[in-house]
Length: 524
Image (cartoon, rainbow, N blue to C red):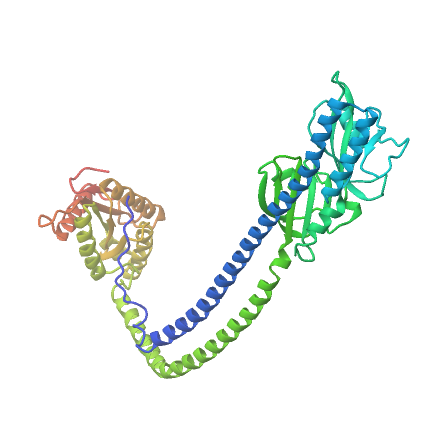
């Protein structure tokens, strides 16, 4: 059965608020709105300033990484160009004494021309020093134990190789090695040409940049070996950082990008721009501390927050004074409103009592007539069924004659509780129609649904087992008539529903009582 909204015949519990009361509410709302608006605007402006600051820093670190990458490329390219020429000469001319003297003069000149070079060295297949850029060649020196020599000896590729940072055997200075393999005429390993780049050359260049106290710059090999880092610490040279987030997470995703993450080396959160060079196996990174970048923003935020807070306090104080004055003006009227509301509430209670049957507690005939009219109109508009159950206590006159009118009243009260419990939806209405007759109005219900409700009421009353010697069953029973239909405008009136249900009730009584019948006379 479709649920129908209950009919509300009561008035509002309170009279409309006095005209002055909304002014107080509006004043409070206005003050609160202004204060909240100022705070929200300040929060938005502050957050946008933070985003702008971070965006500018990301651009700065990106450009710094490009500059560092270009510097690393130019530095290595200069050394590698010299090595390419030496490899070609060695493979063509060999190691004759005259050629070695010319080679010596050539490499000395190249070192003088390129400020990044620490030295140039040539080693034979055994690692012995053949020629270098030093004024005098050391006799008996051997570098076969160096990483770059072992690499070229064991690998046949002819590309450039950049090794981890080492200390020079000749000067003790930290250097970066750039080397190439050269072969003999038969294609076998002939030796290594090596250019060493000064670590100080990179340091001098990186010290030109303003990166704050917690900023960092580094150049590393693709496999994650640090060649140089600012701030410079010898313990970081050659350190393996391949398991740090930059190499483990970000480089596999993009060869160049800007990310913010916590450094695994010192725990500082940095805005980090990195690039992987295309021509050489190098990764460069420029990073600025996020806390240092946002330091000025934080101080400005505190100053602005204090200013806005003071303004909000002033506005709240002025607003509270205004609201207090308004409140004093409406206080007297509020007292009158409360008195009027009490009177109206009393009237509503009296009106409610006027709509309720005093004996049974059910709705009285007046409330039933109003509800029937309203629900009938609603059913007509919605084209929905409206059902009515009319109930009469069997042989009730004999009950009064046998047990007295006081007992009869108690009997009606007991029956009315069952009838009231038979309605399960807010829109249903149980009412005392007159004397021992009661009705149940069921909006949105057809005959079948009404029959179920009526039968449940009949059985519940029978099961009360109220003694009635004047009834054939020996206990109090009821008979009920039912009708339900969909009203049609201008063809039906509410009275037709009552008449049909009453006719069905009469038929039920004529059939021996303690039964339910519908308006067409068929049994349940």
